[in-house]
Amino acid sequence: MLVDAGDAVVVEDPVYLGARQVFEAHGPHLVGLPTDTEGLDPDQLAARLRGGLRPRLVYCVPNFSNPCGSTLSPARREVLARLARQYGFVIVEDDPYRPLHFGPCPPTPIAAAAPEHTVYLGSTSKFIAPGLRVGWLAAPAWMLDALIAAKQSVDLHTAPLNQLIAADLLGDDAFLVPHLEHVRSRYRERAHILYDAVGDFVESRPPTGGMFLWGRTATPTRPALAHAVEGGVAYVPGAAFAVTPGAHRGHLRLSFATLDGAELLLAAARLRSALTTVS
Ligand SMILES: Cc1ncc(COP(=O)(O)O)c(C=O)c1O
Image (cartoon, rainbow, N blue to C red):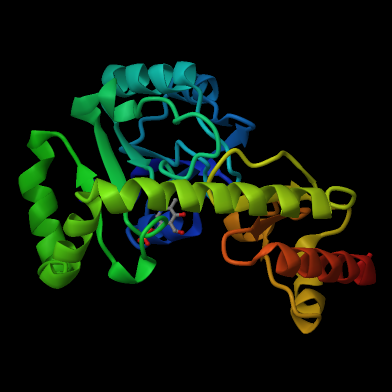
């Protein structure tokens, strides 16, 4: 709805692949901003804006991002919100991992500081069931008519049965509160098992939420993937998330969400052997 061919769209580099594919279908000028342990650096964005960059939108995953697992600090959220107001761009705040925190609740959404400039996205996928295909957005009133028309043009509407199931579960604290506690503690435990198991050959930080461990290895990760799959383990090579050609070749994204502790240890051993075969 917001992007025409040639418009500048700012994304984190590395970026969530699905978002990138959506943007690319509309022929934008994709601008990747380097990220650090706190995600997108708004000072770098400010410098580009001062240099004349005028994006239509800035896309970010503020909590436990895909692929890096990083979380934007409250200070960075404030700066991003201020820049959106000052330069008139829209922030797409894609927040499916918010409920999956291993410690305290993540900071307040950016949308709270720039409600007229933010489209906030949520989803049932990461904590109820991805197969439901139910998510939601909160957007300023000035966008709603066009957003509804755009959604209708894609699929008429989301299946009502699935929406009713989602509404029922989301409104049911007796189910949701213990369910979320369970998912968080499972994922926290699995994250730590995987982090420890790969610690001597994957350089990473302990995940604070979400589903992913992002790390750097001594060898390029794309060539090793075939060996890994042959050996019975899979990962996503860092290059798959790169906006800048050639970036993140030594990185990989591992998921700790589905395997239990014993399976994760086996996966780590297989990964070690695949990465050593290639080096
Ligand atoms: C950042 C991000 N946004 C969106 C999605 C997709 O969510 P959904 O299943 O609700 O389409 C994913 C899933 O991988 C994701 O990592």
